[in-house]
Image (tube, rainbow, N blue to C red; front, top):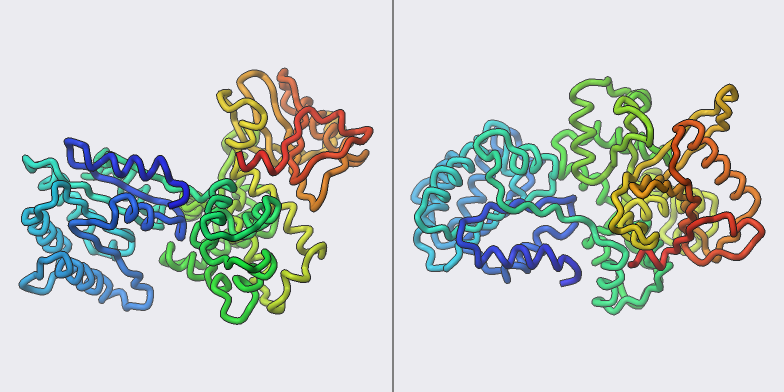
Length: 479
């Protein structure tokens, strides 16, 4: 198993605990939650069940269908209900019988895709509360490890992790499983004997993000462009239809979520709530707030307040690499099956690669801090922008990555994707000096401001390269 060292160690340690444990594992779809749990417990469970997607089932039959599937899992674990289950209270009563009869030292109960089981009016959460609070924790034997898991991170946060009802503060272990880093992707490719150099791994990350399932589809013996054509552009390509499946699996009515995502895909920078409303024609309301929070919890977007701004100036930005790639190249469905092999240096690819590389950098902030030698320094990481204002002496600037440090230094980061060593020129130098000047004037900061370049290869020595305070290459993003 590649990566997940700390998470696996934590789950294994629960087998030695003296108290029963309630574990919540969450993270975006395809990130490897189920695999982590199964590997950590060596595929040995007293009971395991996976909720099923009921999108294609009429609403009135969804609860019945979920209970029927749960009943099948009970039978596989050695307990066949003597009647058809009609409530989740009855279902968990049956689960109690399995636990009581089990000779396992620790009774590991694994319920996957719990959110799909929570159909309208099902009372699943109430029954789960009763099972845990009224029975598991009341037993003299403290031998149950209940692991619940779901890809709908927002649902897990609202109903399990941050529950306000009977499950409030009942979670003993929470694992927010993050996508792989560049280094973990490199290790994963090595485990599959796939030979990519680090530049190719960065480009692949720009397309797939750190989602392990997507990386599992890569084939050895093929170049990166060949693999990308196979995954996205050929007839029946496995990731061509993933986009709609991804959002349908997470949200009951995905249309408005997709409209928000597409609005954010249309711009490289973060945009305000008002701009989202204009682009999507979704009214500003509590429902929009909920949808934005859910997309953020699922790891598709990030929310941030620009440096020196107030909360009302909050911006939203797409950070999911796969979603960006799909919307740039697959949505229109106009490319042939060999597109990526011949697409290098096209205007479309060049425009996308700059934005995509910025996303890779934003997902590797700890590595950037390590490269700067400030791993132990408290920082605020966000973006910043200002409009031109001649009266204030502002020329107008956009800074996509700003690291504000407690040691009274601000790193103004410029992220440049290149196919070879980067040569800082007069245009780059002017732009960096303009950003620093605008930031100093607009925020009146007394901190020292360091120009910082993050790029793929090395930086050539030019008359302007000496003005750069810090240089980070993609090699250091693997740190």
